[in-house]
Length: 462
Ligand SMILES: Cc1cc2nc3c(=O)[nH]c(=O)nc-3n(C[C@H](O)[C@H](O)[C@H](O)COP(=O)(O)OP(=O)(O)OC[C@H]3O[C@@H](n4cnc5c(N)ncnc54)[C@H](O)[C@@H]3O)c2cc1C
Image 1 (cartoon, helix red, strand yellow):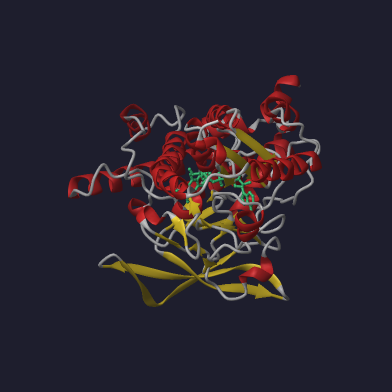
Image 2 (image 1 turned 45 degrees about the vertical axis):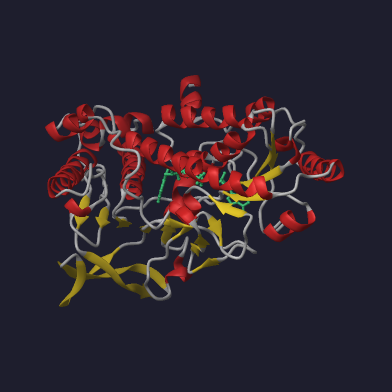
C-alpha cells in the first residue's frame, strides 16, 4: 500500500460537498470515512429541494451514490457530530489525519423581531421545517411535525427558496379548495407545472369560489433586487439585465401562482392577542444608496394565522465547532480551515450558505437563454428556471470542495502516516457504528432499503 492508504480522512456530512471532497481524496488513494447523521447522505437534495424537482433530485442523489461507492470510502450513517463524537475526539482519540466538515446550513435565520421563537410551530413556521414536511408527508411512516396551510399566509423572504415557499403554500391551498368545493383531486406535479391560474381555468373556477385567500410575499427590497437571476459580471449592463429579468420572473410567477407581493417591507413587531400569534407589523422602507431606511410613520399590520420565515439558512450550533452568531469561523485561503484547528477544513454550504442563496460568480450562467426567454415571453408552462438555478448552486458547492482539496492534500502530505494499529482502530470503531444502525457495508443495498417512498410512485399506483 502506498502512503496515501496510510492516511485516514473523516468527512462529516455526505451530501453534495462532502461526497465530492471524499471522492476526490479517495481517487487520490486516501482512505476516507464519510459520516452522516441521517441514514442517507442526501442533505438539502432530499430535505430542502421541493419534491416536484424529481429529475434533478434523482440525478444529484445518483451522483452522490456514485461517489460514495468508491472502494476507498467507508460510509457511516446515523453518526451526529457533536453527539456521537466531537471534532477533538475524532482527531485525538480516533486519530484521523484530517477532518472535513460538510454539514451544510440547517438553522433558519431568525427574523429579528422580539419574541418570535415562542411562536415557532404556533403560527410561525421555519422554511426548513416546512419543506421537510412537504417533501415527506406522503410517506406511510412519516412521523415528523404536521402543518396545516391556512388561508392568507405571509411569507417573509426574497430569494429562490422563498418562491418555493409561495408555490408550496399555493399548491396546498388549491388542492384543499378543489377537494372541498369541487370534489376533485389534482396532484402537486400538475399544479406546479401548469400553475394555479391555469388549473383554476381548467376547472372553470376562481380562488374566491374555492374560498382561497392567497399568500403574500414580503420582501425588504424591490422585485428587481431579488437574487433570481445571476449577473454575468459586474458591468452596469449585466446588473441592469439581472434586475430586469428578476422583476419579470417575479411578475410571471405572480401571474402563474396568483400570490401577492409587498416590496420594501421589513418585519417590525409581532401582533399577539391572548398569547396567540395574530400577524406581523411591517415597517415600510426606502432604499437610499443601497441601504434600507425606515420611512417614518409608515408601518402596516398584516393579520394572519400563518407566517413562513424564509430568510436563509445558517450552520447549526454544533459542540466543538466555532459557530458564532450562526457563522462558522474559518481562516486561511478561501476560508478553508476551521478556526482553532489546523487539520479541520470546512466545505460546502456550512461556509457558503450566508443567509439567502448566493449568486453564482464562479460557474457562469447555466440558466439557458431559451428558458429565460420562454418565461419573459410569457410561456409560463414550460421548463422552470428554478431547477437550473438550483443545479447551478449544486455545481458551485462542488467547485468549493474541489478548490479546497488541494489545501487539504498539502496538509495530509505533512502528516505522519498511520500505523497498522491506528488503521485497525478506525476500521473497528467505524464498523461498530455501522453495525449499530444495521448497515453491513453494502452501500447500494442500503440506499435501496432506505430510499423514501416517492409520491410520484404512489400516484402511479393509484
Ligand atoms: C432549498 C435550498 C436552499 C439553498 N440555499 C442555498 C444557500 O443559501 N446558499 C448556497 O450557496 N446554496 C444554497 N443551496 C444550494 C446548495 O448547493 C445546496 O444546499 C447543497 O446541497 C449544499 O451542499 P452541502 O453538502 O454543503 O450541504 P447539505 O446538502 O445540507 O448536506 C449536509 C449533510 O451533512 C449532514 N449533517 C448535518 N449536520 C450533521 C452533523 N452534526 N453530523 C453529521 N452529519 C451532519 C446532513 O445530514 C447532510 O447530509 C440551496 C439549495 C436548496 C435546495
